[in-house]
Image 1 (tube, rainbow, N blue to C red):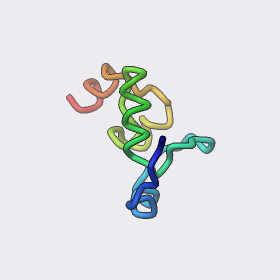
Image 2 (image 1 turned 45 degrees about the vertical axis):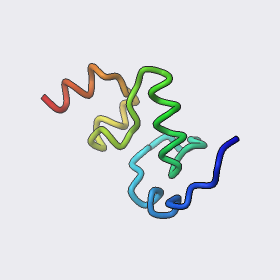
Image 3 (image 1 turned 180 degrees about the vertical axis):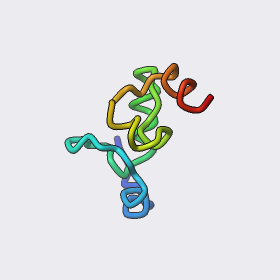
Image 4 (image 1 turned 120 degrees about the horizontal axis):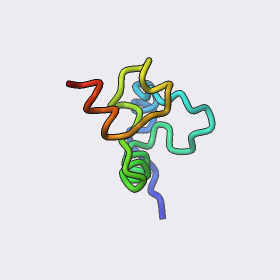
Length: 66
């Protein structure tokens, strides 16, 4: 059962996820669990221009941050 995020409003202000239908936007705990379960990283680990490609792979993260 999901718990209400006490930092939701602050997280939402900082969240750079560009997927408009994302039900996890602003709820970092659920977002991280979701993406790690898919062997991905969340949007906040990528610059905005890269995030918009929706390539959330570890390989893309290494490419961007190398």
